Amino acid sequence: MSHHARPTEAAARRPADPSAMSLDRRTLLQAGGWIVGASGLALAAGCTRTPSPSPTTGTTATAGGAATAPWAPPSEPMAFPEGFRWGAATSAFQVEGSTTADGRGPSIWDTFAALPGTIDGGATGDPAADHYRRWRSDLELMSSLGLGAYRFSVAWPRVQPTGSGAANARGLDFYKNLVDGLLERNIHPAVTLYHWDLPQPLQDAGGWPARDTAARFADYAAIVFDALGDRPADWFTINEPKTTAYVGYLYGSHAPGLTDPEAAVRAVHHQLLAHGLAVQAFRARRAADADAGIGIALNLQPVYAAIGAEAAATRADAVENRLFLDPVLRGEYPTDAIGKLAGQLRADPAALETAVHDGDLATIAAPCDHLGVQYYGVTAVDRSGGNVEMYPKSEASWQQVHAEGFYETLTRIRDDYPAIPLVVTENGIPDRGPDGTLADVERREYLRTHLQQAARAIDDGVDLRGYYAWSLLDNFEWARGYTQRWGLVHVDFDTQERIAKDSAAWYRSVIEANAVAPGE
Image (cartoon, rainbow, N blue to C red; front, side, top):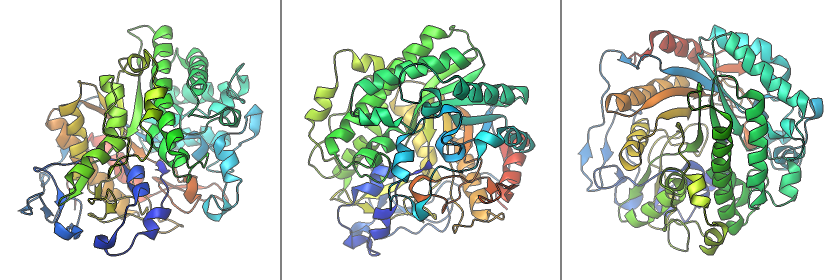
């Protein structure tokens, strides 16, 4: 999301009749997910679309074809635990602008956006939401919205303009001032070290498919920890390594715009290795009782199987989720993610085998303090591994909205992996139309139904500690440029005026009550 970041061209090319769909991995690779088995949801034979009038009403079909009633929320507000952390999120390239200010070097997104035809409307990362110059007023805006936390990312090219060597003091000063300003307003910082803006010189040297990039990331992480590590904060190493690897190196719709399956596989491993090395650097610099923790942010969601597509969906699950969850939380890679079978990442398995060196998996699995979960919707696959549509889509054609899939995601991690605190680091929906609206009823209902599922998961034993809505501000939406608006706050990109949308006022009421009320 930022997310989001996922390209939509493939979805736009899909035939209207789901039964006529051929193999289309791009949208699934963007969306992510895992298979829901016989006790979960599946499409009826022939890949017919299952009715779902709203995220919490209607009927769905089980693998056996029988209709089951969805979960119904209680009639009373659903409370969250005391101390639950409420926030909103952004990323550096999407909001900062000022792409050449104060010694910042070029990133792969600067290079990619400069290429004709890559971004809707020919947009670039300037001015974005001009946050680099307007951060003080944006902090006041956060306070007015009642936010208790703010998740942002550090722009690697601001800290190390070439991706290596000495730190750029002016770049670090921006983030020091930002963090101090947050703390002065009792807003908890959540710092993401990498949200896709790789310094261009590192891409020129091989990018994430090159092992040395992981080592460079560890050096960069150490610089940021040394500069900001004395402040209380939550830390996240890599944002959505899946999107970077697949959409950037396999499908070419994101920076750096490559289409190399084996490079994508190596990019997966080296990002996860970079995560593990950064965790080690963090531990070396922070006392065990420091008011800070570290983890990674993964985009996850269920994969539903059409009748007869269970095997393909299981393999798609490996590609979308287990290829990331298993090494981080178990210290191993799944064996069914890469190959030539339906649902697999079509690459040579040797690309991963040769990338993994002795000790890598132990490094990747270094214990984390929390896991960031990014959830936007669900996906479904047919026998070929191609995508089928099951639930209504948002303005983002890759996003099938189904709030109950959020509950399934959170409880799946609880059930299948070692215990770890969870933080929802992104969750949201775009406005309808490129100009957006202040009366964003659809976003309010999306957030409401998803927060109900989060509260439901907590009631069922999920250790969920916080929630960050995506996004605080309308911003540069990657390949969609400024044509999709995901913010709680409307931004006029000509004047940079900020106006809170109706959803922002609603979200403030949730924060104040520490509870989500039933729908009207």
